Length: 433
Ligand SMILES: Cc1ncc(COP(=O)(O)O)c(C=O)c1O
Image (cartoon, rainbow, N blue to C red; front, side, top):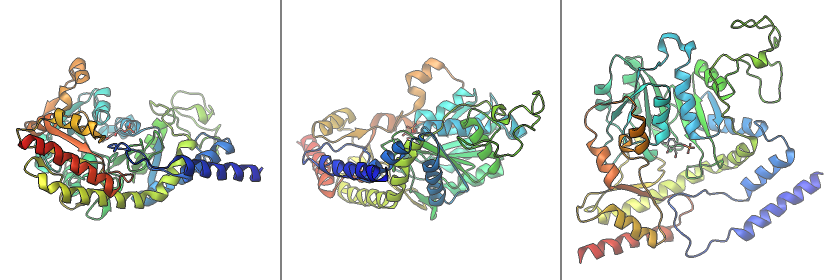
């Protein structure tokens, strides 16, 4: 059987090599996944093993995440959005007693966000308190955060926008002094660091996304990481139907007292497998996805290097257009692993849509900074959630109108980036005449 398996794996490599040849005029997408035969071999091996649900591949993948971020606990989930949901839901667990976030409590977050950073706040009927981002870095200012705190603030939930880390020292300090939980939405920032330490390793809870656009991919996927054992246990329970039992998939009686628990108002000895201590979901990742993740993690350092190199190239070349655009700026003390190359139009002669359409015609993909000022989104208006803004959202509105980003993912070569810069030049020249 091993012989047949090896033959299949060899064939998958040949298949990949013969089908992955690069076409000269390929579209320069803002974000694509980078993979080779190793990802295919892993997922095929996993399929042939026939386990599929969380198993040995997942264990290995979680270990890799922990090693990379230098954190105690990592739990894979089926998306970054699920990771965000679980993180906030964990902080709403009754087991946290007076530290628990309840309906009506406040969560401070950025107005310019990805929707699923904000949505869990609305889902638990807490009140989002929106603060503005700084142009150029697109991170929050700690002084704005301080001003936003009220007696009801329980959580600060912030993303490292496009991989650029917010000031983790100051934000963490503010949270500690005020007994506020901190969640780092690290979905776009795997590989970024602040004062030499990996982002995602600072907060009470941090999240990752492995959707194809990100630094690594598992197709769909994400993770929650933490150094806090209590929070880890709550997140694991919430992820796994809310159960009290912590047996890995396919295992029984890890606690060695499966029929000796007395919890809630259940009869003594009720099967531990079916005792639920949290209001849970099922948001687990499959082993097939983890198998891809294992191959991707082995390439992460190369991916980071390429992203940083592409960022430096674009920054150097785009300097010539600084009169037209605010160029991206690493936040203080940070070494970002950028998700994209972000630009904000500063010249009134340029409008975003004609530029994006021009780039599109030239086969160059662009993206916006997610939802822009989220309070302007139709779903937000329709749901009419209770919310508060602290300070004005002037920059968030500017971002909504004038900001976009282009790709710098590892699949982009210097020739491709040159083509991007040339397209900008052509567009801007047409504006001059
Ligand atoms: C900052 C941020 N948070 C959360 C998410 C959600 O991740 P996912 O697409 O894996 O659900 C994204 C998606 O790109 C994101 O950019």
